[in-house]
Length: 294
Image (cartoon, rainbow, N blue to C red; front, top):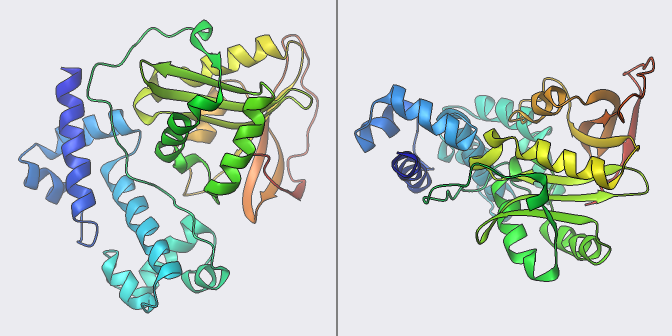
């Protein structure tokens, strides 16, 4: 049953990818694949962690951003290509997701994706991982690690691949990078800084997010950094680009801290207190600018 569900969702993703320049919606995708739209919506959302509408929107905006940087097409033409009926509607959602207008994004000449194509594992996924399955990454893991990064790119705005890989090699050499595999596929990855207790990168394969993999990595890190406060940055409240990361970290016990700006993108720092450490009164309105470590 699990394999059949993944095959259906994979068919939907492939259809969407072939028709990114069309006006796509749940009804049209379901009709093309001859599935109930209610059934397709349910299994797609559970498997991918995004609704079909969210996935289509993020993929089309990513392709639009690519055209803004790597083509000379007018913004209004890119809006039509992306499935929007007006430049105003396109600009509104683009700014909500990218935090800048299409014109200013073009002027900056720096492309980064909101969402890349998701590739799912069609074989049955392992369901009973423990924190002991999490290992330190080695150089041979980099290629598989980067495949996971592409799948979880929705959690990392302003992502730059070359800089990331350079930093990743350093984290691996310093034994500050952890991975979790399901057979030959990396399904979870974390890079951290022991001195500060910060999680500098944490990604989980979309197909495995519902299995509490994030909590396993946190439990592993708590063991490695015993007694230290753990911190992490993620989207600010109300950010339309957030696909559920804030909610997940709050559910896992993180507390909100200061507002930040990382590489020009508005974020917020979260902290996880060590056991038995009392929470202190905190004024969340503080805002400062910092850069990412990974």
